[in-house]
Image (tube, rainbow over the protein chains, first blue to last red):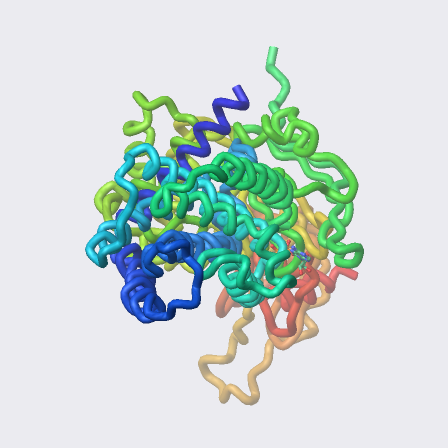
Length: 256
Length: 347
Ligand SMILES: Nc1ncnc2c1ncn2[C@@H]1O[C@H](COP(=O)(O)OP(=O)(O)OP(=O)(O)O)[C@@H](O)[C@H]1O
Ligand SMILES: [Mg+2]
């Protein structure tokens, strides 16, 4: 059955990424270094600046969700590089000649990227505790926060696959990737509240899915203010569905 | 009653124009029999890869149809994908995992049942002689090992048609031989149809049942390797005549007596398996269809006339000559050129 085929392919793609990760564990550690520095250095320095209104939350705690998401989404946004590489070699041609749907290929790989993000966050998480960040000790909240992290990372990986299928070459992809990553972080509430931004940035932040993810993770892990969390999840789910669809449709074109 | 020959691939007027300007395939007609090894031979840029990519459902033709075991590669693409294995021209395995893992991922994608999975994987690895290195990372494989791993991946599902785009590109002669021996025994066991692209003439000659030569997107010649060689009609036997006095006279004064020759030439030409004969510079060139039959008879004629032979050289056309002739890439001083000129003496 077609549905079973797709499911199987999705799991195969997830397994592939997991096996890759297992063969190169150092990558995941080295990628954890930068976010830990953000927390330890930037967070500590900025916490002496009293002007950022964080509702009484220590600044380092305030930015922890943002930094967690930043580090994992950075990986997702450049996931497309893997796809570009697979296109330059014959891997994608062969994969697309296998009896599997492009939806399964795209979604499977985006999910795999989401799983990778969770693993990476799990490494940063204990370090944040050691740095004195106080998480809300509610396992359900923590679980929901990780689910959000997983969903948003998967979404950005799909976005990256979409960009890869349009750009096709490494150079062009890198250009777009770099251009995406800055506004993504600075036009979101990852490092400071939206209310501090000029109106123009505010409107970008409003359509930036990362804003909703940060809001949810911050509510669930740090502030305990979960009133907006359901809405955040809806926003991210809509983003995921949209981007999974668009990426899947454009995927077959990548080998033409 | 003999059953009709089963057709594996049927291509009619297949055309592919890239971006509205590059005419990569220009009305290709081709039929490949089931359980044959078929070679598509052509120079760079002639459209081999394009044809294979169309057959493997990677994109749509601009016009024309192609079927694999009756399934249309456009309309029934999902069905086609289930019965084919494919190795692209470029490297196509993940290098950051092991060889075994590469096959494992494909086994899962193809839905090989979990009970059979291990066995199928080891069978495929073994048939390509990779069982000993299977658990090492592909990063550390040599080019030849990677190529064999790619083929093993394609053999995994025991496809009905195996598409190989330049399967031995960059391999040394012994590795090429090993790959082909493995492929042949696999084919023998499972009756797989093999369709491969190459620009190695000898490979097509040695391993294919049928060959097509493609040039500028058109099939210019089709048949078995020996039919193609025969299509050049000729084997040339060159007889260097010895002057009877050579042993005693100074070489500069020695020359074969030309006046003796016209009559002999006529008689040789009259032999019914001789197509033509010509004489110059004390060398008699005879164009024949089959040297093994013609040679004794010609020698007989020459001997009757008391002509002594110094040396006999026979030049058989190779697939190179066929290729060079039909792919229109003849260069001066190649064997093909000499042969072509030689066969021209008939006119
Ligand atoms: N994706 C593509 N887009 C545009 N043109 C292409 C594309 N692929 C191939 N071509 C062109 O189509 C023609 C046939 O190319 P193809 O790759 O099929 O040749 P080939 O016989 O496989 O050559 P080679 O022996 O070098 O692999 C060439 O002129 C090539 O430039
Ligand atoms: Mg090619």
